[in-house]
Amino acid sequence: MSESSGQRVSRESTPSFFAWCDESDRIDAFAAALSALVHPWRICGSLSIFSTWRDEIPVDEVAATLHAQFGTDAYAWASFGVTLSSGRALGFSSHCCGDGQLRRGASGPLGMSPFDKEELLPLRLPVGLLASARSIEVEAAMASLVVQEDVEDLLLRLCAPGASRRVTTGGCTALGHWGAPIEIGATYHATAAEVVRDLALSWVHLHDDDKVERAAGLSTDALRARVDAAPHGSRIVVKGGAEVSREAVLQAIDTAPAVLLDALEASALPDDEWRAVEPYAREIMKIIAEGAPVHDVDLTTRKHVRFLEQHAPYHVRRLPSGGVMLATHPYRILWPLWADALFLLGITS
Image 1: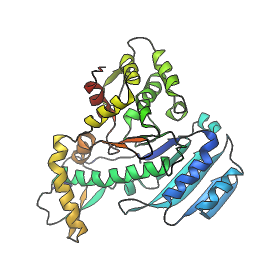
Image 2: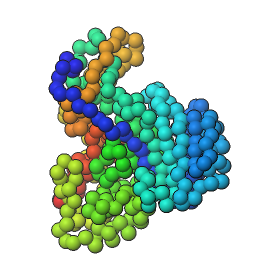
Image 3: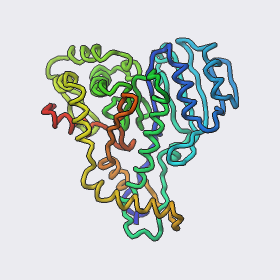
Image 4: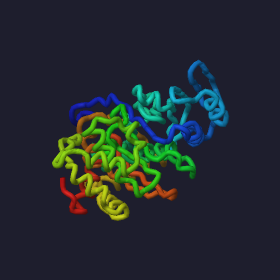
């Protein structure tokens, strides 16, 4: 039984979502994201900027309220409820800030996170009492199926709520800050051809110690120049101990974007461990939806978390807008996906 299997672990960091766009577009991008997130109520519980505070403000009034005061030193904050694609309802806070606030350490031009980490990453999960295929791995797979769907839904609502493509890049992380893209669980790019920026931004962050929320505004050519300026043979160390060389990053940047995307898609195939349990996880979720009796199981054991860290599936989603999203469960990072793609291309670190 999972309740007694393995040492329990605690996840203190709640998943946070970040997005980057030009300062001149931020209010409109923020308002568009709120419009997509707050559906169907279209009411923010509260909104603040400088000395202005409003409760129960309609989403349609947010842009006008913020435009009147927004500038480089502004930091706007809003709270609201969200109904996710899974049907769960969560409370969120979100912010939008100017470049002056970024220079003073604000986390991302646009950002949001749930008020309670347990709402987005449940610590317990109902499992069918009569299910014959229960196991720690099946329980973890059920959690992953629910959470990954919601994470991808939220990131797209923040970054790509419409066709404007104001937001050029974004991500979801359980690190508590916008970390290196290859060390987080999901990234978004408005232009699929720029997916290699995940590697370039990771280099600038891990090697040069630049904050991602500030470096995200650099062009791909500028990022390449930063990597090229590093000494030959330089390396970065990724979470888990893997090393990535300067030369490997440069080769990836110089690879045709279509070829790189194909390699990422080929590397996103589920592993044997996931394929062995996914059908059972979906079967149990189906019988629960049909009204079968359930029993809550603990998802915080070391074995549950370890399965998600090692086997949660990767998704490479080419979006109708021309963008791309790379995503997995927030407990896992994107580096293994990138490592396999680089290996397929003959790029070694």
